[in-house]
Length: 150
Image 1 (cartoon, rainbow, N blue to C red):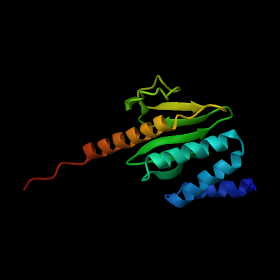
Image 2: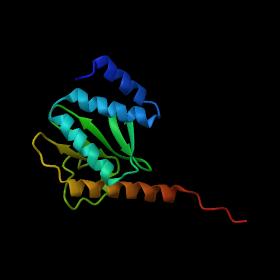
Image 3: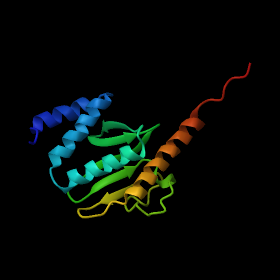
Image 4: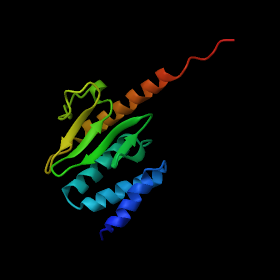
């Protein structure tokens, strides 16, 4: 049964807070609200992301699902004709399977547009998520100040 639009908006509004549970509920609401191939696709990529990085944190920012680990890994936007996974640091990641097919001209982000009927290369997507997490971890390590000497 579909939730009412008001209930869905309330879940999404609550998710803008730092509560991970609220964010997960907002993503659940988005998936249920879509009710078509996009909901199946978003649910599938969500599961792949969580399998690739069990420590991933689900957030709800900018009215879209966000997956983070030491910084943003990717967002999951839904449009009429595509589900778009935008990797925040995608331009810095190796993509041997050539999953990135959108936002290719930017210096920072890269995206994957998934259209109805597209096959998701699960193994390659998991590798990309892990690479994004590793990239974020390397940035976090570099950002830490060196210990002071006495």
